[in-house]
Image (cartoon, rainbow, N blue to C red; front, side, top):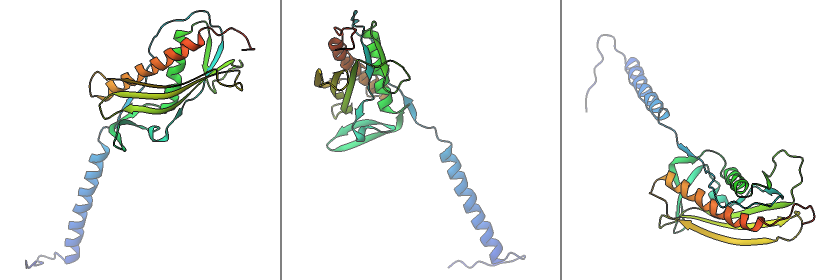
Amino acid sequence: MTNLSFKNGLSRRHLFKTVMGGAVLATTGSVLTACGNAGPTYYTLSSVPGMIYRGSASIIEVRTPSLAGFLDKDRIVSEISNNKLTLSSSDAWGDNVTNMIGRVMMLNLAQRLPDARIFLQNQATETTPQVYVEMDISKFNQDSSGNAIVTADLVIRYNGDKPAKFNRLLTLQKTPADSGTQALVVALSQLLGQVSDTAAENLRDLPASSTL
């Protein structure tokens, strides 16, 4: 065993304080280094142009979509495979993902149906919508093969309380340009564009009437 001697007035207490002070300083430096690490990279969905349909002058409300809880995360779900949910460690959504999906759907429909008035649920307006567009999304991620996949139950209702005039379960997939997160987000945006195409095709012939 090493024998420590204490000379020149160096006490055991002084040695203990010196050693512990160094340990605290080292720990603090580690925390500061961790805090200096770069944060996540944020991504947002984007609208995608499609075919333009003239003549529909209806007032359309895009309702906030329903999204499966395991997909409603701040971090981007990079993959779902073999009952395993993988979240990106460095990439996150720039806004609540359901808000982004609803906003992109609204922008897509506004481009495709320029004669209609289209707005989001809870958006300040004095106008009563004639038509409601709803989506229940169960897949919005990348699968084990690397494909972006969107599964959405698309519903169109006239005058709100009436039975749905259109109800179809859509399952769409697209291979991203590469394995990066940005390519995945672009592919998901393009798939939402396809969902919007289906909605626009079924909204194009609606009359401008409150008695739909």
